[in-house]
Amino acid sequence: MHLLVDSTGLKLCGASEWLIEEHGARTRRAWRTLHIGMDAETGQIVAATLTKKEVDDGAQVGPLLDQVAASVASFTADGAYDQDGVPAAVAERRPAAAIIVPPRSIAVPSETAETAPTQRDRHLQFIAKHGRAAWQMASGYTIRARAEATIGRFKQVVGNRLRSRTGQCRATEVDVAVHTLNRMLDLGRPISIRIA
Image (cartoon, rainbow, N blue to C red; front, side, top):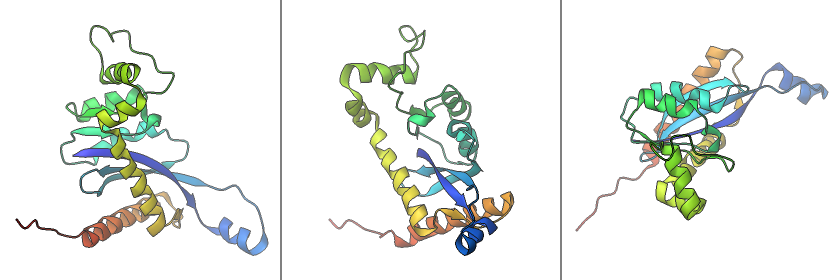
Protein backbone atom coordinates (compact mmCIF):
# COMPACT_ATOMS: atom_id res chain seq x y z
CA MET A 1 0.00 0.00 0.00
CA HIS A 2 1.12 3.55 -0.71
CA LEU A 3 0.04 5.62 2.29
CA LEU A 4 -0.80 9.29 1.71
CA VAL A 5 -1.08 11.54 4.76
CA ASP A 6 -2.65 14.99 5.09
CA SER A 7 -4.49 17.11 7.65
CA THR A 8 -7.18 19.78 7.77
CA GLY A 9 -8.97 21.94 10.29
CA LEU A 10 -12.55 21.32 11.42
CA LYS A 11 -14.56 23.96 13.22
CA LEU A 12 -16.32 23.11 16.47
CA CYS A 13 -20.00 24.00 16.61
CA GLY A 14 -22.07 24.43 19.71
CA ALA A 15 -23.78 27.08 21.78
CA SER A 16 -21.30 29.73 20.68
CA GLU A 17 -22.35 29.27 17.05
CA TRP A 18 -25.99 29.73 18.07
CA LEU A 19 -25.12 32.93 19.97
CA ILE A 20 -23.40 34.36 16.91
CA GLU A 21 -26.39 33.59 14.67
CA GLU A 22 -29.06 34.80 17.11
CA HIS A 23 -27.46 37.75 18.87
CA GLY A 24 -24.37 38.64 16.90
CA ALA A 25 -22.23 37.78 19.94
CA ARG A 26 -18.59 37.16 19.15
CA THR A 27 -16.62 34.34 20.70
CA ARG A 28 -13.29 32.77 19.88
CA ARG A 29 -13.68 30.01 17.34
CA ALA A 30 -12.47 26.60 18.37
CA TRP A 31 -10.87 24.16 15.93
CA ARG A 32 -9.70 20.57 15.84
CA THR A 33 -7.29 19.07 13.34
CA LEU A 34 -8.25 15.96 11.40
CA HIS A 35 -5.25 13.87 10.31
CA ILE A 36 -5.94 11.20 7.70
CA GLY A 37 -4.00 8.41 6.08
CA MET A 38 -5.36 7.01 2.84
CA ASP A 39 -4.51 4.16 0.53
CA ALA A 40 -3.42 5.70 -2.79
CA GLU A 41 -4.56 2.69 -4.82
CA THR A 42 -8.11 2.32 -3.45
CA GLY A 43 -8.81 5.85 -2.22
CA GLN A 44 -9.98 4.45 1.13
CA ILE A 45 -9.22 6.33 4.33
CA VAL A 46 -7.37 3.72 6.40
CA ALA A 47 -6.40 5.88 9.39
CA ALA A 48 -7.75 9.00 11.05
CA THR A 49 -7.01 10.93 14.24
CA LEU A 50 -8.55 14.07 15.66
CA THR A 51 -6.36 16.39 17.71
CA LYS A 52 -6.34 19.90 19.12
CA LYS A 53 -5.14 22.51 16.65
CA GLU A 54 -1.86 23.00 18.53
CA VAL A 55 -0.71 19.40 17.89
CA ASP A 56 2.00 19.16 15.25
CA ASP A 57 1.28 17.16 12.07
CA GLY A 58 4.50 15.18 12.41
CA ALA A 59 3.51 13.99 15.89
CA GLN A 60 0.55 12.10 14.42
CA VAL A 61 2.57 9.91 12.04
CA GLY A 62 2.95 7.16 14.64
CA PRO A 63 -0.73 7.02 15.64
CA LEU A 64 -1.76 6.98 11.96
CA LEU A 65 0.68 4.17 11.10
CA ASP A 66 -0.52 2.18 14.12
CA GLN A 67 -4.01 2.08 12.58
CA VAL A 68 -2.80 0.63 9.27
CA ALA A 69 -2.91 -3.18 9.18
CA ALA A 70 -1.53 -3.68 5.66
CA SER A 71 2.12 -3.43 4.72
CA VAL A 72 3.20 0.06 3.67
CA ALA A 73 5.45 0.41 0.61
CA SER A 74 5.67 4.19 0.78
CA PHE A 75 4.72 7.05 3.10
CA THR A 76 3.95 10.30 1.26
CA ALA A 77 3.18 13.65 2.90
CA ASP A 78 3.68 17.38 2.30
CA GLY A 79 6.54 19.57 3.52
CA ALA A 80 5.03 20.01 6.98
CA TYR A 81 6.22 16.47 7.69
CA ASP A 82 9.88 17.30 6.93
CA GLN A 83 10.91 16.80 10.56
CA ASP A 84 13.37 14.59 12.40
CA GLY A 85 10.66 12.60 14.19
CA VAL A 86 8.82 11.53 11.03
CA PRO A 87 11.48 9.22 9.53
CA ALA A 88 12.04 7.73 12.99
CA ALA A 89 8.30 7.02 13.45
CA VAL A 90 8.03 5.46 9.99
CA ALA A 91 11.21 3.39 10.42
CA GLU A 92 10.04 2.14 13.81
CA ARG A 93 6.71 0.86 12.46
CA ARG A 94 7.39 0.21 8.76
CA PRO A 95 11.19 -0.06 8.21
CA ALA A 96 10.91 -0.99 4.52
CA ALA A 97 8.67 1.97 3.60
CA ALA A 98 10.02 4.68 1.32
CA ILE A 99 9.53 8.14 2.81
CA ILE A 100 8.47 10.67 0.18
CA VAL A 101 8.38 14.05 1.87
CA PRO A 102 9.70 17.14 0.07
CA PRO A 103 12.62 18.73 1.91
CA ARG A 104 12.12 22.38 2.77
CA SER A 105 13.81 24.94 0.56
CA ILE A 106 16.32 25.74 3.34
CA ALA A 107 17.09 22.05 4.03
CA VAL A 108 20.71 20.95 4.28
CA PRO A 109 22.11 17.41 3.97
CA SER A 110 22.99 15.47 7.09
CA GLU A 111 26.57 15.07 8.26
CA THR A 112 26.65 11.53 6.87
CA ALA A 113 25.25 12.48 3.45
CA GLU A 114 28.48 11.58 1.63
CA THR A 115 29.17 8.26 3.35
CA ALA A 116 25.74 6.95 4.42
CA PRO A 117 22.98 9.12 2.91
CA THR A 118 19.47 8.93 4.34
CA GLN A 119 16.38 8.92 2.13
CA ARG A 120 16.10 12.65 2.76
CA ASP A 121 19.73 13.17 1.70
CA ARG A 122 19.06 11.30 -1.54
CA HIS A 123 16.00 13.53 -2.14
CA LEU A 124 18.14 16.64 -1.58
CA GLN A 125 20.83 15.36 -3.94
CA PHE A 126 18.28 14.61 -6.66
CA ILE A 127 16.64 18.03 -6.26
CA ALA A 128 20.03 19.77 -6.44
CA LYS A 129 20.89 17.92 -9.63
CA HIS A 130 17.55 17.80 -11.49
CA GLY A 131 15.22 20.30 -9.80
CA ARG A 132 12.17 20.02 -7.58
CA ALA A 133 9.64 19.35 -10.37
CA ALA A 134 11.73 16.45 -11.69
CA TRP A 135 12.00 15.07 -8.15
CA GLN A 136 8.23 15.20 -7.73
CA MET A 137 7.73 13.16 -10.89
CA ALA A 138 10.58 10.70 -10.23
CA SER A 139 9.69 10.06 -6.57
CA GLY A 140 5.95 9.67 -7.13
CA TYR A 141 5.17 12.65 -4.92
CA THR A 142 2.53 13.85 -7.39
CA ILE A 143 0.04 11.24 -6.13
CA ARG A 144 -0.22 13.26 -2.90
CA ALA A 145 -2.87 15.32 -4.69
CA ARG A 146 -5.20 12.37 -4.05
CA ALA A 147 -4.98 13.03 -0.30
CA GLU A 148 -5.98 16.66 -0.88
CA ALA A 149 -8.89 15.45 -3.03
CA THR A 150 -9.97 13.15 -0.20
CA ILE A 151 -9.89 16.05 2.25
CA GLY A 152 -11.99 18.05 -0.21
CA ARG A 153 -14.44 15.15 -0.55
CA PHE A 154 -14.67 14.91 3.26
CA LYS A 155 -15.50 18.60 3.57
CA GLN A 156 -17.93 18.53 0.63
CA VAL A 157 -19.90 15.51 1.82
CA VAL A 158 -19.55 15.67 5.62
CA GLY A 159 -18.81 19.35 6.09
CA ASN A 160 -16.09 21.25 7.90
CA ARG A 161 -17.77 21.29 11.31
CA LEU A 162 -17.91 18.95 14.27
CA ARG A 163 -21.24 19.06 16.06
CA SER A 164 -20.43 16.87 19.09
CA ARG A 165 -19.54 18.49 22.40
CA THR A 166 -17.10 16.00 23.96
CA GLY A 167 -13.81 14.62 22.70
CA GLN A 168 -14.97 10.99 22.57
CA CYS A 169 -18.16 11.94 20.72
CA ARG A 170 -16.13 14.00 18.23
CA ALA A 171 -13.83 11.02 17.61
CA THR A 172 -16.89 8.83 17.02
CA GLU A 173 -18.35 11.46 14.69
CA VAL A 174 -15.13 11.39 12.63
CA ASP A 175 -15.07 7.57 12.60
CA VAL A 176 -18.66 7.46 11.30
CA ALA A 177 -17.86 10.07 8.65
CA VAL A 178 -14.78 8.13 7.49
CA HIS A 179 -16.73 4.87 7.35
CA THR A 180 -19.51 6.59 5.38
CA LEU A 181 -17.09 8.10 2.86
CA ASN A 182 -15.34 4.75 2.38
CA ARG A 183 -18.69 3.02 1.87
CA MET A 184 -19.81 5.67 -0.64
CA LEU A 185 -16.53 5.18 -2.50
CA ASP A 186 -17.12 1.41 -2.63
CA LEU A 187 -20.65 1.84 -3.93
CA GLY A 188 -19.76 4.53 -6.45
CA ARG A 189 -16.73 2.86 -8.02
CA PRO A 190 -17.56 1.05 -11.25
CA ILE A 191 -16.45 -2.53 -11.68
CA SER A 192 -14.91 -2.84 -15.11
CA ILE A 193 -13.81 -5.97 -16.88
CA ARG A 194 -11.54 -5.89 -19.88
CA ILE A 195 -12.89 -7.84 -22.84
CA ALA A 196 -10.23 -9.01 -25.23
